[in-house]
Structures are given as structure tokens and as C-alpha cells.
Length: 269
Length: 81
Image (cartoon, rainbow over all chains, first blue to last red; front, side, top):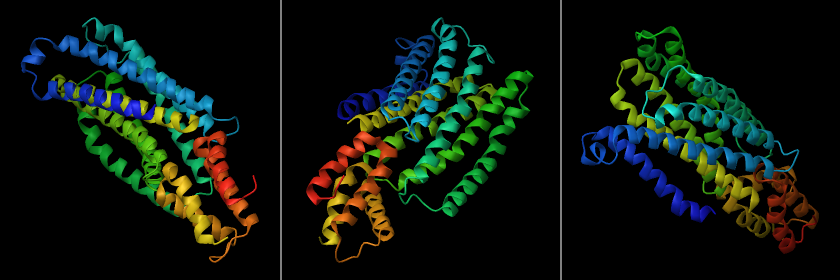
């Protein structure tokens, strides 16, 4: 499956991403003024995101069920699948607006699901770290992990200030403003265990386990980037930059789906 | 059995999964913990080494995959399951 996926999934993911990056860079190109009109592209983005999230949720769920009861990462996969399901439900709640060419409301029911996904995904990542630390494999000392954790936290706090300033200073209703600020904050919090897992994964470089994790973790990095871009562009009222947000989310969900599938292949092979 | 030969066999078997760097580090750490001499490894020590690595691999890839991966090694190196 991995080889087939590499042949199909990667090119499809890159094409989908570059279609939206292209829309952002050259919106007046013939392709984007005729065949792929903005309304069609928004609808297409909604469909791609839902399909990728469905695959990511399904494959994470199957990775959970494929592991034996008592395996310490089994509950982590379940939490990850639940977090991805919440994200899928959030995207599904927005889909009727995006497919019918109407502007998506913000905040909306979708945000309830998106917000619910964060603690589930964060708990999953922490559970993975704990389980991997107990394997007896040399993934770094407690001191090293604490240092990485401290450095990641410091960088996230430093990034949060400039990233949130325009969001907080924006002229928007209080609920929208609060949510726009909350997403990047949640993402920063998610980045801390992500960095630690990336550090652990680096020690497995060259192996198929590392390749699977790298895809999942890169996906979450792009998810964070998408959320920060969304908050930033919303605050600045730059809707013309939405294509980049779509591209970031498509790449994020696609990478998480590919990584989950690779994990599933590892467990089942 | 010569330790270096046994360790190389183990490292080669688990490298595709966890990478050469981690395979070598994990084998070295467990050899140290088990007091395996650089010159010679007994059948019992080899069985313990394979078992320790297998227990760790359970977490990453599940019991069945770890078992099947190590079964070939046990066959070749003679470590007891």
C-alpha cells in the first residue's frame, strides 16, 4: 500500500496544494478566471479537506484497532482519531456554505468542533511521548527532553506576541476576536509536544517509523501555519490571501492522512 | 557467538523499521545493560537482548509485527522466544 500511496497520494497532494498556491499568486490567470472560479475553488477546497480528514480519521482509527489491547500507544491513536474526527465534523459544518458559494459564518458550530479537537490531539501527542520514553530505546534523557520542551515553549511564547497583536488590535466582534486569538494560541500549545516528538523521531531517521511520523508531525505544523495565517488575514481583512490558508490546510490534512496510513501499514505488515 | 556478528545481524534486521542510528544505539544500550562482553555473547544473553528489543518495538509497531520481525532473528541467531 505504501508504494501505491507514494505513487498516487503525494502527486495528488502536491497538485491540490499548488492549485491553491497558484490561485493566491496569480488570481487573474486564465485558469482561475474561467474553469476554476473562486466559488468553485472554495467548494473544491471543502471537498478535498473533508476527503483528506475522512482518510486521516479512518486510518488513525484503524491503527488504534490494529494495536493489541494494553499497548500504551493504542489509546493515543484513539485520541488522535477522535481529534481528527472533530476536525472533520468542523469542516463538514462549514461545507454547506462553501459548497453553495455563501460566506462561511465565523464563529459558528464548526468552531465548537475545531476547538474540541485541540485537547484530544494534544493529549494524544503527550501520550505518544510518554509511551516512547518507556520503551527502553535511547530517545534522550529526561534532561534533554526538558531542555527541548523549555526551548520550544520559549520560542512559542516569543512567536505568540507578534502573531497575536494584529488579531487583538483588529476591529471585530468580541467572540470572533477571542476565537481568532485562541486558534494560534492552541496551535502554539500543540507545537510544544510536536517539537519534542520531532526530536524523538529524528533519532529514528532512515527508518520507516520516522518517515511515518515525519508526515504526521509536518501535517500538524502546516495546520498551525494555516490557523495563524487564517487569524492574521482575518484580522487584516485580507480575504485575497485565503488561497494560502486553503493550501496550508490541504497540505496539513494530507500529510496527517499519509502519515496515519504509513503507521497503519507498519502495524499490519 | 562473536558479539559484533550477532549485533550486526540484529541491527540489519531492525534498521529498515527504526533506522540505523537508533538500531545501533538501542543494541548498544541493551548490550551494556545486560553486561554483554564485546568479545562473546551467550545464547541466553542473545535471547535476552532480542527480547528487550522486541518489548520496545511492541510499542512502536504492535506485538504481532514485533514478534514476526524478531522470529526470523531468533531462528538465525538461536535466541529462545
